[in-house]
Structure formats: C-alpha cells, structure tokens
Amino acid sequence: MKIVKLYFLKCILLGYLTAFYLVDGEKAYAVGGISNSKVVVPSADTVEKGHFEIEPSFGLEFTDDRINTVRFEAVGRFTLGVLSNLEIGTSAGYLNIEDSELIETDRDFGDIEAGLKYRFLDEGKHLPFSLAYQGGITFPTSGEDAPWVFEFGGLILTKNFSEISSIDADFVFALIEDDAWSFVTEVGFGYFVVPWFQPVIEMAYAYENRDNEDGVSLLNITVGFTAPLTEWFTIIIGVTPDIYTKNVDNKVIISSAFTFLF
Image (cartoon, rainbow, N blue to C red; front, side, top):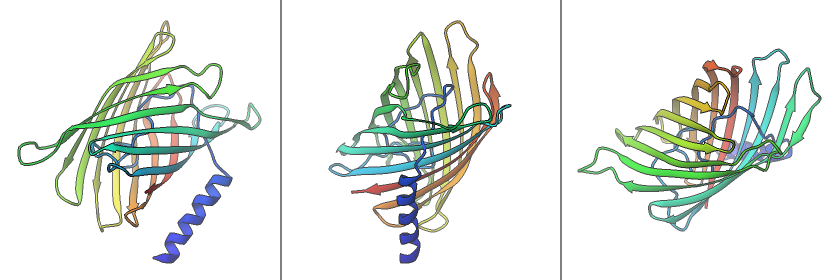
C-alpha cells in the first residue's frame, strides 16, 4: 500500500508540472469551490469544522468537431469547514491548454469560482435524507469574453442507504452576464466494494439560455471511482461522454482529482 501511495503522490507532482486547465465557451455553470461525494456530484456533507480540503484536479477533453479540438485543464480547489454544517471555498483554473488543426497550442488561465454549502436538514430517524443549499459566483478571469456568473439558487440531496451505498442529487440555477441563464442538475450513485474503493455512476443535464440565440443543452454520463486510501487522501477518476447535445459539439472528458484533508 505504501508503494501505491507514493506512486500517486508522484503523479500529483508531475501533474502540477504538466498541468491543464479547460475553458469551454459553451460550458454549463455549476457551483465551484465546494466539496463533492462522487466524481462530479456534490453531497450534502460538509468539510468538518476547523478542517480544510485542498484538491488539484486535471482534465483532458476531446471535442467531436471538424478541427479535432483537444483541451487540457488544471484546477485547484480550497474548501474550509466554517461550522459543523457550513463550508466555503474557492477554485481556480491555473492553466488552460487548447490545440486543434485550426490554431496552434494556446495557453491561458481559467476563471476563479467561489461557493458555499449549507446543510440545513440532516438524515436521521425522522428524515430519510439530508438537504443542503449551494450557491456561488464565478469571476471572469479567463479572458475578455468570459462572463460574470451568479449561481444563486441550488439544492443538494443526499440519501445513505447504508454505510456502503448512497445517492446524491443536486440542481443549481445561474444568472449569466448579458441576459443569459443556466440550469444544471446531476445525480450520482456510489457503492463501496471495499472500504477504500467506491465505483460511481452519474448522470447530468445542463441547459443554457442565451439572449437572442438558440439554447444550448446536453446530457452526459460519468463512470468512475473514488478511492479514499486514508482519512486524509482520496483519489477520484472519471470518464464523461456526452450522450445528447443540442447546439454544441459532443465531448468526452477524462478527469482526475486528488483530495487532501487537513
């Protein structure tokens, strides 16, 4: 096990040296800076009070277009447990690399996102699930055309069927600069085969309405796993192909994240 841990720590260091950040002009906006439970889907659980998470994440995106666009991403997340049921955090894309047959390799920074999660209902004898509010803001630091985004309304529902299986679902509405808005909803199921390995399957739908333009929508699935090797270190791997798109190219995203709890 020590050899495995050292190997993945080495991968993290290499990831920082060859880091990637993805910026998609047709992205769906969800809350950034908050902790998650599965590969992408957040849970109603919050970071323990007085503790914090640091999570570098990396992505490789293949776009099904005429110019074979490939994008790489690296994003860093910091999340702090403020209260027993409240966390705040921020995430920032620190490198974006895009390449295609039309343009040479282009590098840039990504947006900065801030978010919070507040759990106001706890699963127990009288409640079958936990419920939390999520909200945030996206600061447009990736370029002149990047918009301000306000994710003002969102909920997260978590249901633990047992100590080894659970389901998370969420949605969030966002107001986007220049009279646009978006809606994102996700659901994910996880099952711990062993205490340190949880296969995960997720589905997500996103819609973005733009002023004087046709709406953009997509449906995708994510298959992956989380591996909490210790109480302070978790590995997350996932593959996300689009299965339906409207007014946007199909994509496949391979993602990884490494969560450190302090």
